[in-house]
Amino acid sequence: MTKFVFLAASLGLALLASPALAKDAKCYTSDDGEYACRFEMLDKDGSFKITARGKPSFELTIDTPGKAFVSAQFEPGGRYVSLPGTYIRSKADRACWVSDATEAELCAW
Image (tube, rainbow, N blue to C red; front, top):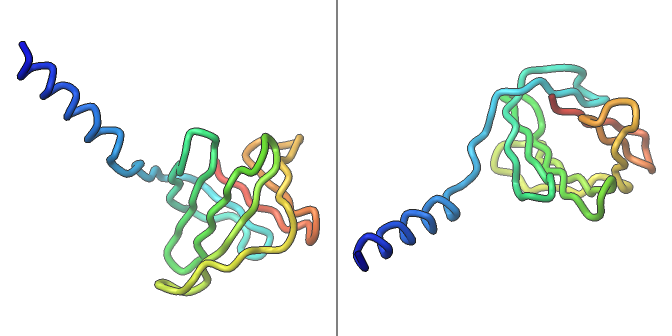
């Protein structure tokens, strides 16, 4: 019985430690328009990462409910750069976030 409990606990820890799986999605940015992308949840608070071949990668990090910060990687292997402003969740489309500094929009469905 002890071996079973240890094995079950080990399996549970391994599942928790494994990275989140990316899913196919549709994305939109003010600069690039609408395109197919990969969407990956980063934490339980709703932070996420979107990637697509030939497009910048974006990481949206939730600061407080409805407010987030966004960084972008413009070249594969390059560093992530913080984008201006706080991104506010859109009331018109909850899949979208809008910068309060530039009105740039980032959406993922």
